[in-house]
Length: 316
Figure 1 (cartoon, rainbow, N blue to C red):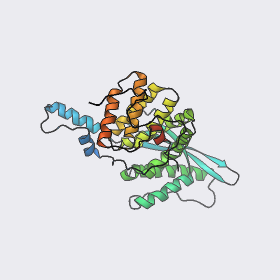
Figure 2: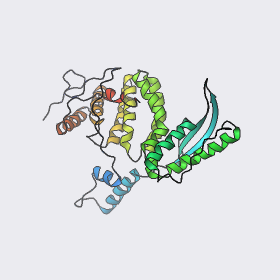
Figure 3: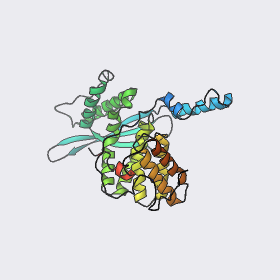
Figure 4: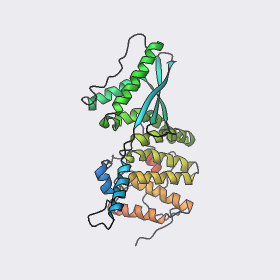
């Protein structure tokens, strides 16, 4: 049996080195993540009961009911709450405030974001490249040469853009697409990760905590997509000397990964969690053991620390 050394000691046997603030490593060859499972794959991965299971009929029914709930579709409602005209030295444009709310229950984490008409236009062009047939019946509000800043035109466009987002969201492949998710989250995440790279952890954390609820709803079909953002939140809490908060977020991230050892964040996250567990007086041995077992099955030549990995996100 492998011996387990304290992660706080120099003799720590994990392959990940201690994070260095402000260090951006050289980019390595990309390692593709495992594909996100569908409902059937998800149930099997969670260890579904076999034909030899000793579970009673009622227990089996409760098990499958619980698993089905894990894949309940999250329904979102889009509103264009307001619009304002902004004037720059060489340009003038309208900024639309989008409010995203989860339907069916009270949503205390409604998302509020702002986008220009040109942002919607860019989204439409990207979607046409991949989903031309799927969105052929979705009407995109046309650009007008004159009258774009009249109150009447802005009111009409608010309604049209609301309808546009709602129609896109109704198409399963579109609402799950990288293009649609990026439209709703990427500008804020790019700013947050930029603050993280600059060591502005409080500002980064403030932005991330506003984006996480929305991204969580948008990626409910594949929770692993949320992991980079959760790991960024962990890094911010940890570097702000909030180990308990960092550990709690890390537990969420591990749950999202669902033991997907091939994911590029799996080993760095386990290493960071083992260090936090040791610092907090929690069970770090089991986390270190999982890390060691994972690397025996899939050795890595040189692993990034969690911070080195997160600072590479949203660079462009």
